[in-house]
Amino acid sequence: MNQFQDHLQRTISECATDIEALYRRCLSTAPNYGVTLEDFTTAIRAAVNKYLGQSDVDVPTAETARSFIGELQTTDLYLALACSRGNEHAWWEFDQSYRRYIERVARHLASADTSAEEVIDSVYVELYGTRVVDGVRQSKFATYTGRGTLRGWLRTVVWHAVIDLHRASHDEVSIEDWSEAGGEARARPGSRERSREGSETAAIDRITRDRYAAATAEALDESLQSLGDHEKLLLLYYHVENLKLREIARLVEVPTSPLRRWFQRQSKRRLSTPESRVHESTIMRWLEKVYEKIQKAFRDVLQGRHGLSDAEVDICTELATGDLAREDVRNNLGDSGATVLSKGRGE
Amino acid sequence: MARQKTDRRAAALRDLIRARLMARAVIAPSRYSGIAHLDGDQLSAFVEGRLGQTESTPFIAHLVSCAACRRATAELVRLQFALGDEGQTNQGVELEEPGRIRRLLEDLASRVVHTHEEVMAYDAPAEDLEQENKTEDEEEKNKGEDEG
View 1 (cartoon, rainbow over the protein chains, first blue to last red):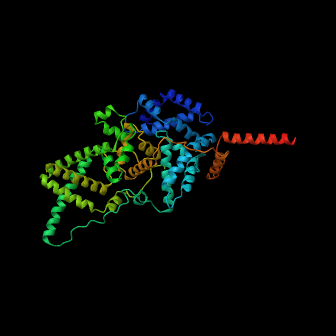
View 2: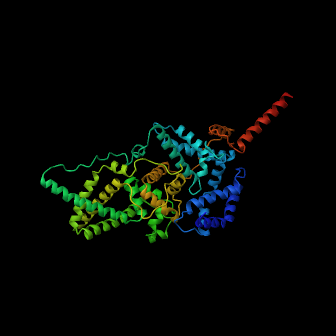
């Protein structure tokens, strides 16, 4: 165990009283689940390790760990632990509380080649676990840490199950196939159509155009690169994943949402009213600010480094937009390995 | 006139940004995220907005550079949005048929891959089954009394 882990374990040990109090509370609600304090503590330890135990950040203080543990959905975690052990009382409670929701998600996601019943059966089998490693049945419940709600976690499990079943009936799932009809499925232009005219004028035009395009692409990439990661992610959600403003607003709806906190750090008014609702217009404002930053950086590069005038910068923008719009997007995505939907590790 | 020009420039730049991002699909993050891919637990915690700032920093960096994980979060956001009415779990759950869970667990246990290892399929009877057994015992007793 390295020094970081050693320190982290000591920090968690300092929270033993808090963990025991949470355990007692869960136990009093469901005394027949068969979850011991040791099981519960081990699960909390695993959650702290997973979310706070990243070696490139400082070791969390006992206060941070205590606050993290306090935010965990411990009732959900307690139920999941009991279900992972196959406790019948817990399964009864789980089935009563969540079966309808699982069915609803499955029905929503079911398609022509994947029936909702098939999905539900597959989810229950995965939750229970049919593989045995070193004498321990590998229940999916054991991967739940309580960081999010059990309901949200189940939604992800059902979503993954649908992809797995879809994959089983096809060789691979392409994003275009799988995504909802939103922006992703729209027809995209074919390969780049460059001018093929052989005349000298056309050749000069092409060279000039290419030089402008190269300078523009370089300036744009540099401008994008200068943004913070939260700003880059907002742009990617909006422009590449085609999330609607209201969907992004939903993503940052919770006052503790990490993206929301990044953007609100810049707004004193928002910081004073952190509970206020995020509307679509707020997201648009965030985007406007990001565009302004890009525009400034973009002009700075083109004018400062390449000595272009305002009018030339406008020409660059127009030429590059036209050229990029004709790019074969799928080829580029293929290069980055982004077209194939891959699941997270250990899923 | 100047305003129109500024608006046109801004609109052109937006088109350019969109086209460039569509062509690239990923941007290099400002910092190395240190994580391979987000698993189901991390994906749902992120989508629900549960992560703290320190925790979320490597996640956001990863999502900027990993199109697959980002697309997964986007799909989950759409799903969450489409399903709506968060927080309603027990709505309209009908009364359980006694013993259903035991039968379900027995069915699931029968699908466990056979090994030489011993596996505990379930470890406690549920009230519904106890209730069912109790009812059966009472019926048996009443039957005996009637016959007697």
